[in-house]
Image (tube, rainbow over all chains, first blue to last red; front, top):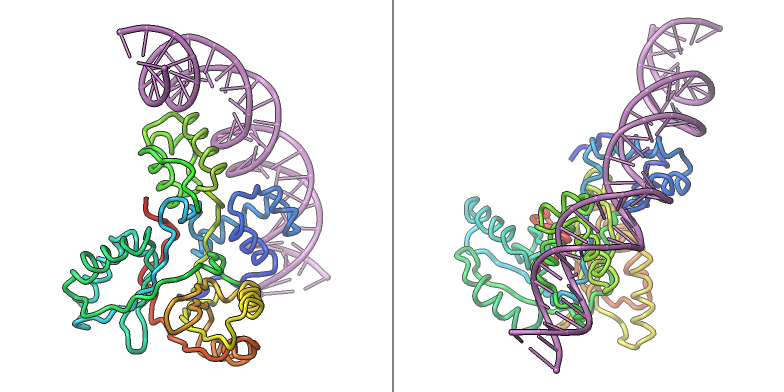
Length: 156
Length: 156
DNA sequence: CTAAAATTGATCGATATATTCCGTTTATAG
DNA sequence: CTATAAACGGAATATATCGATCAATTTTAG
C-alpha cells in the first residue's frame, strides 16, 4: 500500500521500458534511459526489492489457444458474510478461465472477466461452474465483441 | 484467428510455465517440463514464430506507483459510424490510464478498465478527458473496492 | 511391417548478457 | 567547508543463450 521509494525520472523510464519489453538487455536499456548498464541493474534490483517491479511474464495470444472470447460477468452473492466471500474468492482463484475479478461497489458484488472458446463453452462455465457455486445468487453476463485495448503497463 | 499448431502436452507445459515466469532459464524450464533444453528452445522458437507465444513484459504493482484504484466504466457512443468508432478507439489507445477496453454486446457500446490514483483523479479523467470526447454520449462508472484476482495467464 | 521424415537429447563453440568489482563523482549532513 | 555515505560509469568476470551438428529415437505414411 505504502509508496516506499520516490521514483526519479530514470526509474520511471526503466519501468516504462520493462513494462513493454521485459526481455530488453541491460545494455540496450541503459542507452534508452540514459544511464550505465550497471546503474540500470542496481536500480532494477532495488525496484524489485521494494516490490514495485514484480514478475516477468510471457504473454500468449488467447485466440490462438482457443480462448478468443471474453465475457464480462457481474455476480450477486447470496450472503455477504466473510466466510462466504472468502470461499467465493478462493473459488475464483482456482478457476483458470477467470482471469480477472473485482469486488465492486454498486448493485453487483463482483465483476469478472472470463476467457472462453465460444458461446457454448461459456454456457457450460455459467451453468455448471458458476451458478453451481453455493455463494452465487445471480449473474449477468455480457459478451465482448472484440478486445479494443489490452495492456499490462501501468502509467507512470 | 486460426489455430496454426496443435499443442502437445510439452508445449502446454512450456507455455504454462512461461506465462507465470518468463525469466526462467531454458535449463530449469527443461527440467520442469520433462524435455531437453535444446528441445525447449526449439519449441519456444516455433511457438513464437506461430504467434502463439508473444511478448515478454515485466509487471509493476499499481498501488506502489499511485494507481491503486480500478474503475470499470461503460460507454455509450453518440454515433456507431465507422469513423466515430475508430476515432474513439484511437483515443482509448492513446490514454495510458485506460488499460483495457472491450467493444460490447448489449446496452453499452464499450467497457473499459481505468487505473487511477483516487476518486478525485478519476473525476478529472471522467469530466475532462472522457466526457470531453466528441463520440461519447454517456458513461456509467463503477469503482472496484478491491482486485480479487488478476492474471495474464490464459488457461491451456 | 518397413522406409522416410521429423523430432529428440547431447554437446559444442561463439556470442551476448548478467553480475561483481573498483576507483571516481555526486549528494548529504554536520 | 568538510567528512561521510551513496550512487555512478567502466572494466573484468561469470553465466546463459544462440544456433548448429549429429546420432538415436519416435512418428508418419505407404
